[in-house]
Length: 545
Ligand code: DGJ
Image 1: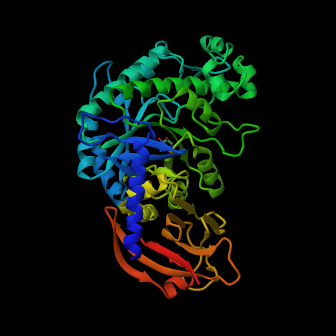
Image 2 (image 1 turned 90 degrees about the vertical axis):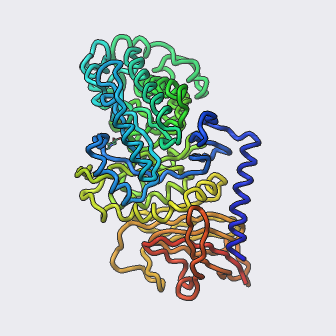
Image 3 (image 1 turned 30 degrees about the vertical axis):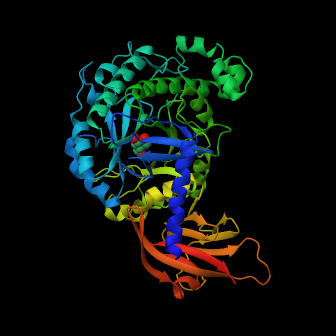
């Protein structure tokens, strides 16, 4: 029977992947012998990535709280939103000022309480280390750091003025940040044997607004010296000074190199005590306009600096884009820029307005290991126009529907994605249809269509459509989506060959196990497979006559 067959195939993929693992696929994390629960880690094979949590493939269906929600008094306004969106992972800042208010005196009481509550709510967590850089500035550093400019120097701009961003070249700053981060990771290791925390973001949107680099005398000396051999060799360039090697991009890439090296040393020291996967997030520059360059956050892991970051920061597993661009043209371009063979795709932040929710489908289509909208709590703050103007259950409804749809099958999707079998698309702003090539088949995904008939709606519907197709076998697919019509055709059709659904079965996953609900036929298949705004998952077997 069709369902049993597809289930068996899915199990077979699992065994194949296990075999791949035994045959020596790269492990970016190492096994954590001390605990019964395996350490979260990222594995890679053929330029694809899988996040493993509790020993199983995992997709981060994330929700990041607002910046100042990292205090116990706020948690009662955080959890209801996390539960409403049905996230499997809460993303929470831990601020340096909060854990080390005085040098060497650490306080982890918030973290301890937060972890207890995360477990009670059955979610995993990601911690954000807000320290030397938070959106480029040191405001989350303790007062003894951010007010002591002689010990922890700020960047100096071209005119000799101070900028509110710490210089990445000060070893005093690196030592202090690294010491605090190591204390955090040591504590986490001690209090979290079940690995509630699955990943840590090191710093937040690193870089500097308003100056391409540090122009202090010490920085100038380095800038006028040679580009480190390691970097020129990795990039396949000829040696020379920064200006000779990188021309007009020299200043910002010099800054990127220094920040990335700083961040890597913090991450490496943290991993040495507790090797969780670690990542950085990027405040993006416009993905199309690089010449002439528009101002952006210089030195961060923007697309032009990804290669420099990869060389300078090998202990950082992921560079994630923070995508606050509503336009589908820009969003799709950013996904392309950060989906690379050397970088797992993780949308580290995105807007919480309803129009962003649909981009989860395209993210998964880029073999995404996770998606995490920002500003998911009921503390009364809205970051409009980047995010939603009004924060309530209605605003979160599209995200909530998608997480509700995907959460019971996240492990299966992650496993299929790692095997290169998952495709996903999001409704573009102009609502044109998209095609996906699936062996001898082609799927067409169209939007703004009624469920019955072929004429598009007269009144435009909200932009919330998208679909995911997973290849289970040559003629067999797992198909799901929201407000989208999925139709299948043959790529090369003989004149006397016609496509027919052999069988379309709707079911649900419960903890990864498929349960039959009904067979779709008649009106439910005659106009293509029309997904409504409700959780619908189909196993589709195609045939010809
Ligand atoms: C991106 C930052 O990383 C977040 O911490 C937050 O400040 C948002 N921007 C606000 O839109």
